[in-house]
Image 1 (cartoon, rainbow, N blue to C red):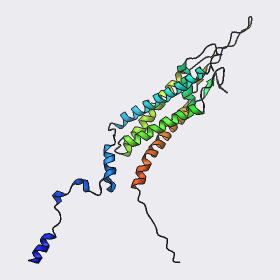
Image 2 (image 1 turned 90 degrees about the horizontal axis):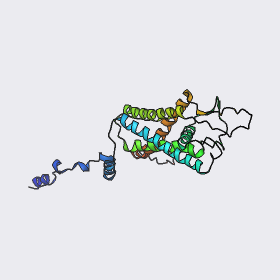
Image 3 (image 1 turned 135 degrees about the vertical axis):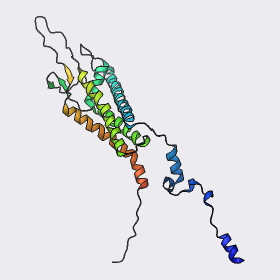
Image 4 (image 1 turned 90 degrees about the vertical axis):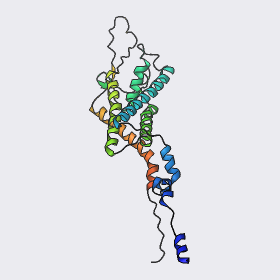
Length: 243
């Protein structure tokens, strides 16, 4: 009688009563962390579409920031002494291209010291704008875009880089400005003003492409670092004092 009663008491819980939320392998053993990941919004779209949207969005953000910086140049009167005062859109283009390291040409030679009266096109502040924007894009990409494979990641980053670099190159080919100085004295023949333009060549395209891919990758690495540290096992060793 006691044996039957002991066997009856030793029965385990029914498998039907177990809930899937009790699985220790779900969410790395932390149900709160699993729920947080499930609630995080993710973008599920073709990689090329996400890359195109991010590339064009980054280009627009950098150009708008350059437009704002160019407006500050006009506000300080740097172009007041130029007879042919440029538009703010032209100076914004020069600022954005100069911030990416593009060489500004004055005629056939590289321009030197573009300060007043022609104004300063690029500065240390404007050079930080593309870096911050591209790093933020990479951070958002790694945090909110779900990628199924390395091939999808490659397609996304390649599309993002192309949709950023191609408009930048097109902008460089059409950005020109001829600052006209004051009229020459009577009886003298004035020289033609040099045309300011941007040198669009292979080195400019390659350097811009590499910088875009680099800073997007840095932003993505910053976003993925906490998750990598969570999954990494922590090994502790005890020091043995014996010889």
